[in-house]
Length: 535
Image 1 (cartoon, rainbow, N blue to C red):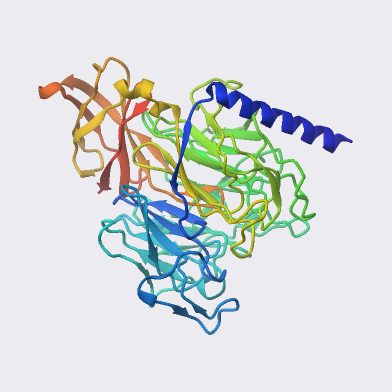
Image 2 (cartoon, one colour):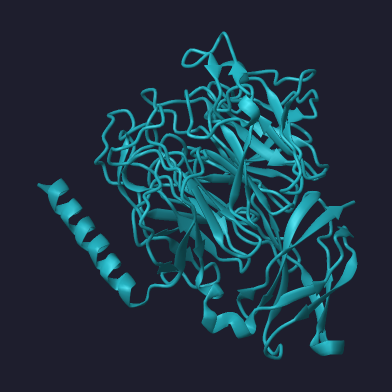
């Protein structure tokens, strides 16, 4: 009897949230693309204000054709040996137009990360893509650029469900994957890495350690989390420096994934706080139980403390497959996902339509704010990415092996955007506009940003660097927000203000590459300018 009562209460809470929305829940939604042709399983925003959309390549036909009658022929493909449909595309944020791209080998549950020059490196996958590296060098939306598969370098082991993280020197470390407990690098190098046994340990064949959460800490080591365990890894010396306490509340990684984010790095950059929220109940995946309620707990740990402990709190909604998106303000948006079941095709129900805002600087017990719900369920294989204008892009959701329509949770080809409350008309008078800024800055460089703003600047002004992560399977690989040191804000000519700030000190705090630079006035961000951070 407990289960019906629980779901009755869940339904009442959900219904109340919908009713409350018509009153005043914060945030607004808009449909950007009614039919993108593909369901984006992997999504990344480029410095050209375009978005790379990527699905698996061995799923049969998508709803988007390759251009000029092109087709992909693969005699080893089980589902479709002659395939004239696209499994990747690029979205132009200025026009919301879709241009198909060609991907040759399977990218199912692969990983990715941007290199310092802005090229997207994509690694691994399934079948013929298991050991492949692919590159997409973005270009202006009106130009032509496409995927290139590397021929002379491959992964030493098959990487399926792995995580990529850019390092301070601009190289990429690749961690985890099915039955893989070691690490490797791009460009390739001899790692001699310690054996991460907890990345392959399983309980009753439910691993819960795929797509590990990886964060580069400002001291240079990696925080690596899988299932309910986490370690501090010194990749330079190939040693585990520390084991963190167990995070209670059940498994947190695929196929029971919640999500994770590292809070903004600021001040002297000596403190790094990790937050991990949601997940499935243990056993939901093994038992294929679509109605088992998800977890609602969040753990928060200061990973740089000498004796760190997990601080626990509860979200307003239980959630599996949620995405945690770092906003320009330092708050975290928790969005997408379901309230029951686990990851996998057809294994989740009860969509969690309400986003939640995690207010990072509020006291425990007061951090969560419920936001306006979407009307589109986004369950398995959905994505969420911060855009340069401060909105959040939502794409994908495919709970079926093939593209399937006319069912409860069909393959989702619509792309939408969520606008946080800081973008409301009431805040327009606070929103800065960047007039002038360098397009390239060096570590530790003191530089100026010129802005205009409708009303005089009188409150706190921030200049924040937001990375462009690779989002897939409820985790944004390489996600990072760095708040710069602002030394002065002074009126300039023509109603402008000149903000003096200092670029991040080194690649440990902010790895080299392209960042969205937001000027934030009293919690309201500008449209970002893309800035390349170099040594």
